[in-house]
Length: 449
Ligand SMILES: *Cc1c(COP(=O)(O)O)cnc(C)c1O
Image (cartoon, rainbow, N blue to C red):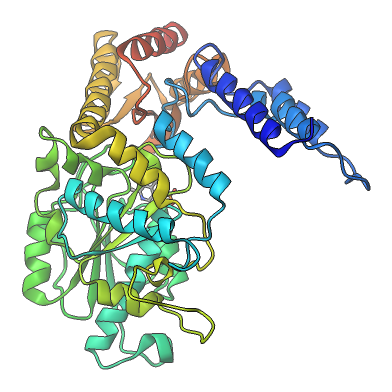
């Protein structure tokens, strides 16, 4: 086989067979599957080899060593699945091989970002005039939005941070919650704010910032709150914090990597009360919109601050009156990740998106009820899609998690909550059904029993 078209068709067949079989296979690969990955290595061959053979080798050794996170019973981290339409759009976009940095390099890439931005701001219930950068994930979204905040806060103090850097700049105070996501601290460190010079606000038993404990804010303060705690799914009290910040002139950033999507529902949108009053937001499309990796959004109320922090100019980089995607992101050359976001939204519609998120939340509650009925303790208020379970003492909880991961029916992660080990279940895939929850519960309870 040597035609380009045959190769692509054959590969599409392999991918389709992989996806079709996902429900029958174990979720995590076996140690033997992982060991066989060595077969992909060895010395680099001197002569090339047939493209079709390369793909066949990749499929035969690579596919079994994947984690079935695109299947219905992967409950680790908060990964989301991949909607069939988003996966298919991703293949087409791969064939297009667009460089979505500039409009002249990819009119379709630029235009789909522009269209998807409007739809996203609508479903996320954020102001229409926000600037949106399509980045790789919430870590980069936090980084990008905080760079815009850094620009704005220092410009107000008469300091051009893009030109002069941070040495000698007026000091910016950073306030975060005790349960701040580790990636937020990384973003702060990359921006020169430092991980350790943050002011930490205590959290309540669900991991929410205690609003009364927020220190005095001012026009040189950035407060980063969370919409969706990675363990409990809880939301920081945005109404109180945004009101206080607005009064005092501080910048509020919201890390809503998955929680921001609750805005698309009718029954949980209230969890986000006050969030739209913030100055910037970060979220992931590869989580709850169920598009392929990598796909996050940096959203800034005043797009000028985002553009000021991200713009680059050079004589050969032709810019016109259209959206120039790289004016909103740290990256220049990049894939056209707006394609899948557009396809997912177009295919789901407003109602399909709401239903997917509501269904995931209902399934999380089904997990919680199943564990309670079996006499196990649910450690969090299940307000969203996150469930934390204690299966006995820490040692037993850890043992059950390790055994279920090895058994293969489903995959659940571990965490620590108030000093004790806990099993963490995150329901965020379009593909998960009640039957998947019941099969997974049965497998976990059998091991824990
Ligand atoms: C997942 C997550 C992140 C990091 O997102 P990436 O897409 O992995 O970079 C940040 N904050 C929260 C609350 C998250 O859930």
